[in-house]
Length: 475
Ligand code: FAD
Image (cartoon, rainbow, N blue to C red; front, side):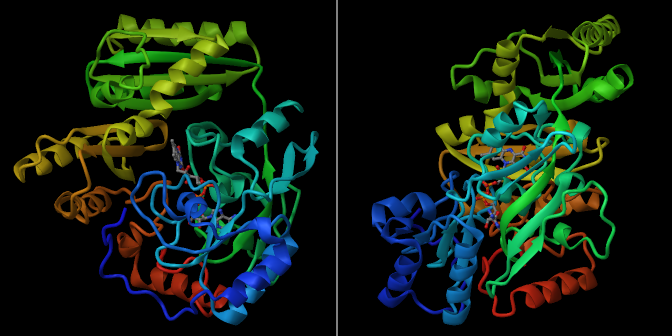
């Protein structure tokens, strides 16, 4: 963490935090919500991957939109750079300062304002933790439309700011479809209220969607209205083993045909991912295979859904497309099986340094890139580094994880921009759902015309003319 990660990045011409600033913040928030203790600040300054680390000397913890607005007014006037932070579970280094930016932690902005049962919506503060929101809406028969491995820590504001995808996008759609309303504080402290509650609102430009994936560079998300799904009465889950990638694709096709309206998730892990996650003491319920899939259904009639799932598995096994498998509708068994997928990144970070890539690719090239990555590393003397592939195959989204004993520039330079260029050349996106943050900002132009990037730059200037919001990130 102490090494100079990005020597080519120079600190912008922002003001340096002074004791008078701290005093002003303390007057606004009180001493206990202005964190200046060095030890306490470590958790705010570094990301969970130990990939990026800033050296901010203050983290502010507002509780209301008005407080966020006042903080931004002060920072705007004083030309202090600001890094908005949600649950700090992001993987591209967007959520921590690069230098000494003021950290704006949203963790105390965690009120749920309203749940509309008939409309199926929840209005809440940006700092609500995704899993806690889901538990609350569950009591009303609703479900948050997104789910991800980081749900116990990530916040809805962070999810919006990264336009997070997750495990069930195949069924419930992206946040672009489920974000109904938004409140944002702009760089100058102005509050932009767009808290629409309705599914349909076609009154002018869909401005709120501009903040999806803006990663804290256009405004601070303070409130949102989210369209929830009806909570399924029946959930079934199949855990399958397959001999080769071709059979993974065949199984995905067959799942869509057999399970159609009930299919809620389709995930893939390769053998290396499974070996990695089992180091956490988890057990794989089937014999060793080259590939594994999790196929989940959400429905309203357990007998009907189990019948459909059984017919799908029987055909897949009879036609020898699936080598082995198990299926369950027991909540505790499903939870255990999900851990085998959700905890893969944790297993890599626990035992080494994780180089992580998150790409979209057409299924015809989906796994080819894992072979290509292995070949490239071997050719340059890094055959010792294991390369894993897992991800949301139902959405064409692959995570490539490479485990090393420690970080090496040489490995990064071998993979970047080669991997991104390979992906774009094969019709994909170099960042499927994690965003650009600090780590990938250089590649914003890959696969986009310069006029698109120019318009993004002019939007950034319009919303944040002095560039104080999350500098060095995205653009
Ligand atoms: P942070 O990490 O704190 O911030 C992320 C970015 O958003 C930063 O640029 C930050 O400045 C900005 N930001 C945060 N809050 C606000 C706000 N209120 N206003 C403005 N900007 C803000 N991502 C997926 O898309 N799909 C997955 O399936 C997925 N799985 C994951 C699994 C694990 C185990 C982990 C650790 C991460 C996973 N992620 C996944 C990545 C990450 O969890 C998501 O990007 C998540 O949406 C980040 O939310 P957060 O609250 O932690 O935001």
